[in-house]
Length: 516
Image (cartoon, rainbow, N blue to C red; front, side):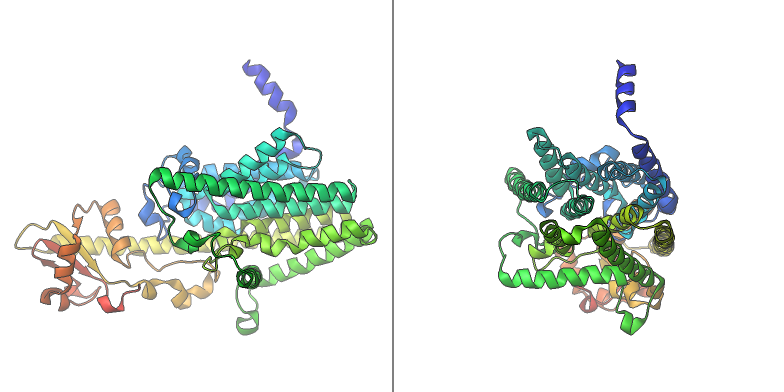
């Protein structure tokens, strides 16, 4: 039976899929090894050293299951290895969807997918990276299951279930399915494989499936909330999603979506700050993508097939709203890098179009440009990881000093509680520091992670074994109003750590200057 199963899959897995899988696996490990082989937590990782990732209140009702394969510990290597494995499987699915055959095309596509900036920022939150990359894989499988020629009920069911589960892990990966489907449709229209009626039918069925999948996702979410006696939280306006739609939200959503996508490509206002290598390469990429789209449309005769041309224009017009679709669900959504993985599909589309429609000279030039893009993505990732490393080292140094001072204190009674006062995020956030010029403008980094009680306590407890309990609310209120605490200096002054009764007090900043 074992030999039969191996033979079955050996015959079904193509050479292109094997190449795609191995290319993405190797590239992903090479680009992100710095993160996987070191302890590089960010501000959220401090709070998630062990967490079940039950974020049902945030709409991610399947995330806990998706992250359960690697346990609920923040395991740098295992989470990273699983995440890259899911990226590699996604690339194999994409290679089969677009019927890639050229090894160079597959290698470039795999490099773009695995080194993409959204992947880098997702690895900042390594404790959920494997779950998020599984969501991307499910989105890709959803499109693959319902490609042209697949109209059986089980194909629709598989596609819908995968998309629903992907949304249940992280809602942003619905956009990956939308962009992948639109780019797949565009390549099919260029190659004139199906009549315009078949193409329109496929488009409509895909749109209906999307709507049905999102409706199923929403229904399951409401059922989970009811069973767990929870209510939606206010993060990113989730509690108001689907209840505040209006024409004004449609207009502002389009404006914000266009702004988010433009900012992703150019990093910052290039007229004020000038070009960076990142923005320069992306501007060249956008020009090359626009050029090959026009050239392919002319060479393929699409410009003379009016119905198919209209559908192609519609598919392209859906790129920006598809990338940032949740801007149309809530005015409070703020898109970050990790929510924009779908843009990677556009880079892969460019690789495919140049291979199929351009001559050797232009396709080689485009290949060199995209190779440079991949290299710069890798450089950006490792610069960011180096800042995470420095942040952790500073945090560790501060933690050592705090623990030394705590042990140096000779209190009148044995300490039982600890209280950390103040919030210094505005002082330690790299966005407020000249050092920020060396990292991408969209990345959120801190000089160190001990900037308020929420982060200082778990860091001291998990890293150094601090066994003091957080001061309860009543004691906290009394201490905050006491003269001994009010007279304390702020960290790192000598008098910033003091024993008050049975509580060790660390004063990071004055309470009135704390961030909300």
